[in-house]
Image 1 (cartoon, rainbow, N blue to C red):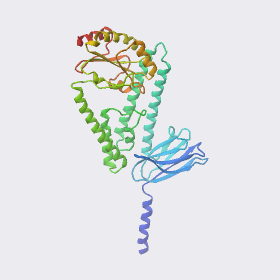
Image 2 (image 1 turned 135 degrees about the horizontal axis):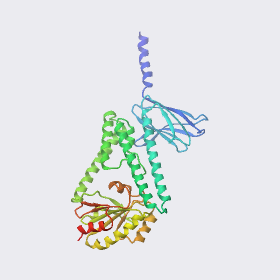
Image 3 (image 1 turned 90 degrees about the horizontal axis):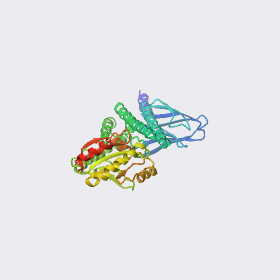
Image 4 (image 1 turned 90 degrees about the vertical axis):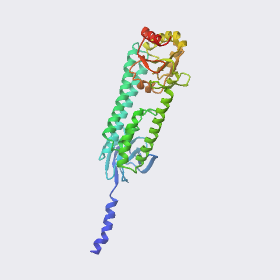
Length: 384
């Protein structure tokens, strides 16, 4: 009996050593001689856990003790990587090829890792489609029917971004209890553009933060998202207060973009004026034609209080500036050349160019997409 009791703690120790272990194994084809690294992705950066040099068969096996869900990276020495989301006692099996690792791979034994793969696949699909649209715009800029082509491509561009946004929101609502939703919150289209980038998106941060606080109160990612939520809430409250102070009754969404001299200009800086908010593209024939009407209206009413705030959707700086010079546009012309003024398009739901909004001296939007005589008559109602 004594012998049995003595053995019991040893058995328990042995049982404990088998708990809370995440195993990651698999094979990478065509990777002989390359080193594969196994890392933990912390909020503060990457923590190296293990590595090995792959043989001809490309097999590998790693394990780590973690009681909470964590993000892990499998990295090859060629720069390719796969992101995993592992939980305690999971055995994750990954298969891929050296030159396609990260974009084409299979993963089994881990629901979280499958969710991460779903997120990355959708984002890669979105990025590829956006790049294709940009390429088409550049290739067809000299076509005779570029005006209609560009409008259709612009609509596709906005639709693609909205599709990604809808996907991210739906994913979070379906998987709010998974750490994968943390990843969904902070995915980016490019270095400057989050998939979720509107002020109201703080609500999804709150949903994920609340879920993580309940499930994993001491997790590093829980602490990080709670800090981020507090910062966003303060920033949003400050922004709302600043808008209340500055707007003084203005009801139009504000825009701030750099002009052709590199100086940032706020749309709200024109408050008290009658504003024509105009969207255009330098390579669009209809936009260039509309510029002639705008010149006529501007020359007639500018000294009486009319201002034009014109936003280009160009991504070619030379083409944009050349068109401004050729058309002799003396009003405010702004553009975000990196994204084609994407946020300004989304803010006013612009689907094609040319387009415009008319904003009166009190900040009320009093007209939309008015051209020619209709534009001049509307301006004349408010600028005397």
